[in-house]
Amino acid sequence: MEYLDSLTGFRLDGRRPNDMRQIRGEIGVVAKADGSALFEMGNTKVIAAVYGPREVQNKSQQVNNQALVRCEYSMANFSTGDRARRPKGDRRSTEISLVIRQTMETCILTHLMPRSQIDIFVQVLQADGGTRSACINAATLALADAGVPMCDIVTSCSAGYLSSTPLLDLNYIEDSAGGPDVTVGILAKMDKVTLLQMDAKLPIDIFENVMQLAIEGCKAIAQYIRGVLLENTKQLECCRGV
Amino acid sequence: MAAGGGEGEDELVTPGELLGDSSGLIAGTGAYVAPNGRSIRASLAGIRCITPAQPDAADQRSTVEVVGHKAQGAVPQPGSVVIARVTKVMARMASADIMCVESKAVREKFTGIIRQQDVRATEIDKVDMYLSFHPGDIVRALVLSLGDARAYYLSTAKNELGVVSAQSIAGATMVPISWTEMQCPLTGQVEKRKVAKVD
Image 1: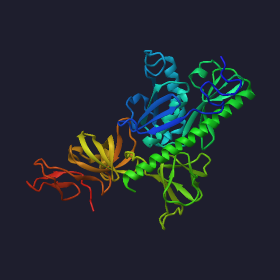
Image 2 (image 1 turned 180 degrees about the horizontal axis):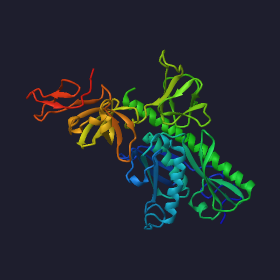
Image 3 (image 1 turned 120 degrees about the vertical axis):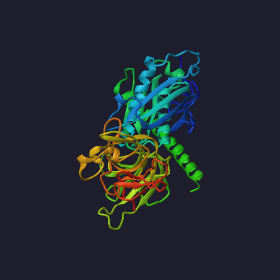
């Protein structure tokens, strides 16, 4: 299968190799949660809800000098092309839960909230590749909405390497091509990598190019997320009549 | 959005944004000092707010805060004065639910324990818990420590700490008559409490 048009150099969905899909973020979509957000990357759509910081439910898990961060990732049955019943806590979702938890834990200032717990629930409503990244971005927005202190906002984006070209933000078709898929999460302002995943082999020079492309994507997302947060803050201010 | 640096009172910031340098500013709520120990960054999304130091303060740096985000419930910390309602009195301690931290109401339940040795400053071994508190009393107390896994340790061992409001058996709010006694205005009955000296 050709992933790049040999004549125009366009991808299957009409993007250029270093084009990202349209992104959209919305804050405050779950009324009951302390913080919530919806994040879309093209056709990938995820919802995140944050509860806490609150008292630890299971006392044996309590940490005395920092907050306990928990994360649960799930995919809706209707999120993929074929409607499949998914058991809760399968291998894939446990792994992604762990990845999201570790990524968010690094940016939350957990030492400010000892003996408390923060729950992050992310659910994929529509899956079209890059769910991992979308979940992290949604979780960041939701955490910021909840007012959880963070050292920086984490954003994530993936990049792949198909037809000898680095491609930014793979969709489902490109993802299932089986090529390398590099997911990167960065702290945008501090220029620090907090997440880097790839389950394929790539020569180091090509890998660096692909990773650099993903980082550029992360930075673009970070800029967008900041915009959303500022807009939300402005609205809050308006509501208070300041 | 430009990163901080200039003086502006209503500038919107997001987590990670640079607020200034720690040589001229102190990080307040919603801000933190970066691991390099120099730059101060925001940890919340909100409005940047700089308050100058008190003229008589030892540290003359201004405090930078990020405000205007969703208010977080207050959390008791060691050293903070809390208002609590006594729920249970036992021979060696009394347990209480913390309702306010400083002047802010808490959003969720925190339990505290006043141990026998923390009720008053003098003759701490002769304290009778049953003559110091009753269930339902409103107590002003100091948070000693985060305590054990279940409760904060509270102390009333100061003149201004102790029972601030209590109901008598008759159901009326009692009037303090000394630091150990309160009187019911309806029946004239005197009950023992560890009374706080309220200005």
